Amino acid sequence: MPMSSPHSHLTTGDSSKTSSGRTERFVVRLICAWLIIQPWLIGGVYWWSEALNATVGLVCLVAALRLKENRRTLWRFPVFWLGLLFCGYVLCQAVNAWGYAVQRVPTALTYDLYKKDYISWLPSGVGGNYQQTSSWRTFVYWLAPWLLVCAWWAAVRRRRSGRIFSLVVFLNGIVMAAVVIYERFHPPTKILWFYSFPDLDPHSTQFASFVDHNKAAALLSLLMGTGFVVAGRLQARAQAQARDTGLTWVALFGCLIIFASFFSLGSRAGLAVACGVFVGGLVILILARLLAKDYSPGLWLGSLMLFAAVAGVGVFEFIHRDSGTWGRVVYLHEHPEEVDTREILRQETIHMIKARFWLGWGGGSYRYVSPNFFMEEVYAWHDTRFPDGLSVQSDWAHSDWLQLPMEFGMIGAGLLLAILFSLYGRALWLSRRLGAAGFAALLACAGTMAHAVVDFPMYNASILAVFSILLVSTVKNAELESRHESKS
Image (cartoon, rainbow, N blue to C red; front, side, top):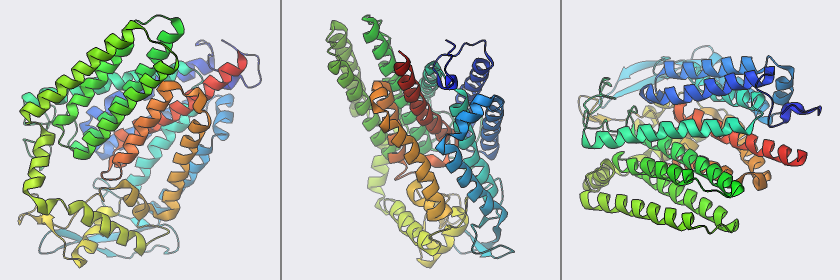
């Protein structure tokens, strides 16, 4: 509904026939379509997927900023300025780069770092191979979520847009989970039955389009969280209309389908996070319903059916114990020498942080810097990609909270934390307007951040894009809800 207020660009219901309405539809549709497509592009791990991510963000932001009121909205958005500083920081690392040379060592490939013309007191990075990773690729990678978030914040002024986003990515998650479950009983030899990924064990492809079970688990956990967002909104609408259509329970059974797929992924941390998100989401919805004093028969009947379905999944997994997760636990129990690998990575990453505490080694530098630190400590672990079966090479610290300061230093990591705290702090400030859906979204984002303690979900473009839009749309919806109530 058009508003006569001078702050009409912050209202919740502009007409779809206005310029702002058409712009919002374009931005929301393009972002949602892209977030559906990207996970199916081999998990969004390739450089061209990251480049497309940034391209979509740039197109959306340019479209949003065509309108003066959208530009005013964006200039008042703290994340815009913080993100601009961070992207400038990473760009400085890319421009002010040092190089590397490849050298054979007894156990694996390592990298002999050397200086070329760069300024040591400015942020610097690695001038490595772009397709493998480099500071330029890292710049494009982190530019994308900033562009997407800014475009969403500037263009969106209807609460309906946030609901559309949650619904479409949730349905996409159900489809991905169904593929994972199907692959458990019909193991393919290729990714999605047609793509051969180099050096991939043909018996380890049971995670839909992803080539890494940890990243697949992180994305599915996030998409399951959006399912509880959808269920929370459906429940709130049913309570407001005093008419329960049963759609809330349909959404919850969709969440259960995604949860069941985690037993096939082989990610112990992923399963633990998924349990937290699943149980936490149910608790949020139950509390919201009880606080509303809604004790309808549908609550008890739906709860009984859902409990029976969850129990059925648990009993099935306990009896068969043939899933990827069970197999992973058994394998690690039989090979205790592999259990300490992540602890080694964490310890050596801390040493790397101390070596360049404030400025870091540069975006994308972990694979080039880490082997030399591992060699100093005479560390090596099993890796069938190398002829002798041993390696000292790792692309990830298996803890984003350590890898981020290692690559970007405390200055760059501090900017990222400032962005995160800005959004989370704003959400908590508007907590009265969040509702069950908003708290479920924050829980899903918290699950991803918890997973980042032991894995690397923030280093996947698809996961980072969904995480960013889910968080910013939650804050935006809370602000729109607040303004809507003030106008009522």
